[in-house]
Image (cartoon, rainbow, N blue to C red):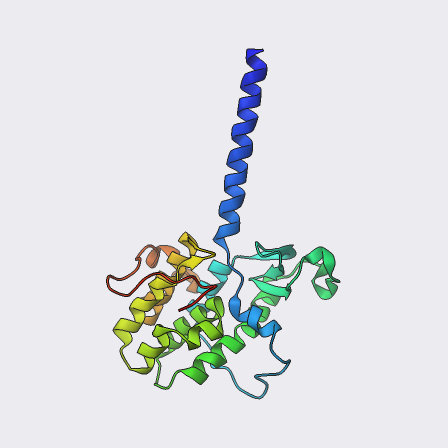
Length: 235
């Protein structure tokens, strides 16, 4: 009887640990809100507008935080996704015809998709920012906008401070956008810290032009920057 009880207890502990781990995984990734917005915009809305490129280190930063999945899967929002966070549809994979995405994606194809996916976010930064930006500043804002969405960026204190030319105060604003669905996410904290470091010109490529999270993660919210913000709510 004692052995049965011990086995049952162990299974219960394993189940709870598994559920906790699954919950943490679901909270670690937030779908690109810019892409979600794109599904609700007319096709070709930004047609004819050339998107300013971002730095390689910024592309590597986005790839790192989006994660790499060569096969189609349902993200925590039940959106069918593949590659570096590319949204195939705003519904589960099982409910659609995957078409070309029924087969695994190569990293080269995934990178090409990411370049296309970030275009509307990059164009939004070009549209809303009224001052000159360095490549580092532009790339950081593009990464931020790709994650939180174009509408949230347009209404942000971050954009207001950028347009005022107060870049130091603007850099401190990144660290406020670290909540999703009411929870502060470690992944968002690190992503915002890395974007702020890039904006300040303090993020350098590692070996083979790779992104190193340890160079910028964990810097946190600057004192006096303001209350934290949920990226699904905005300011």
